Length: 262
Image 1 (tube, rainbow, N blue to C red):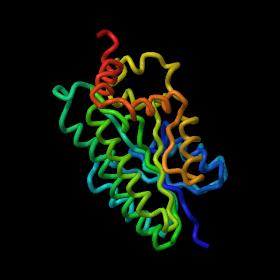
Image 2 (image 1 turned 180 degrees about the horizontal axis):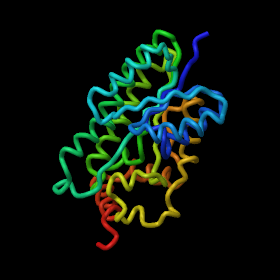
Image 3 (image 1 turned 30 degrees about the vertical axis):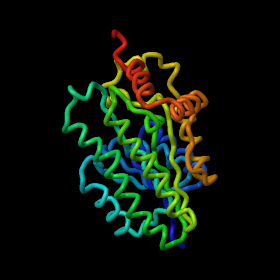
Image 4 (image 1 turned 135 degrees about the vertical axis):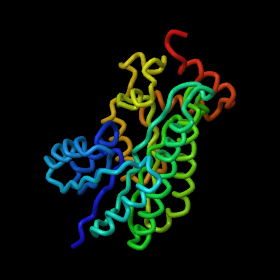
């Protein structure tokens, strides 16, 4: 019998690691992908405690070739991925006029292009098997324009639209596609985005627990839901964004995201 695996990008920290723990608790073998070997080794030890097989692959998905290489590595080893979790993603904080264009293009590569490549390649295999699941990390950022994070919000708007469209295409072919929409969560995202001065992250008590976000995403995927907004407050924010003109939503976001001293 061929073993099946859950492949999770960005699986060593934050929401990705918490998702890996939940899948492991439920008996799923794992392939976790991240850039750093030392973080992969540490996560492997923690996850193997659940009694599942854990395979680690170091891959930098900022590299345009990396997603293709990752797929080839798993197929060359005859690893059957029946659940794909596109979790890896980063943002960049600042006014667009001032931010680094090379960094922004790298974020587009990570958040959008790698998601497209991995989804297409693994989905094609899932369709042959007639079974599979894809969980894409969207964000409540996908539901409103995002001054101070204009490129990040744009990438997540793509992920959300892409996920909903793909779900419609394959829902009658035995494939589940789900979007997970977290809000501000207590992870390293804000440090990597140079966002620690933003008003939105000054009060750590208002940040969601990544374990709670991961549980919401896991349950939605396994229950064949199209999307889940993690957290009651975030659900309310998304509901307001759906009825509010984009111009007002953008201005509200601009005020909430500006540096705390302004």
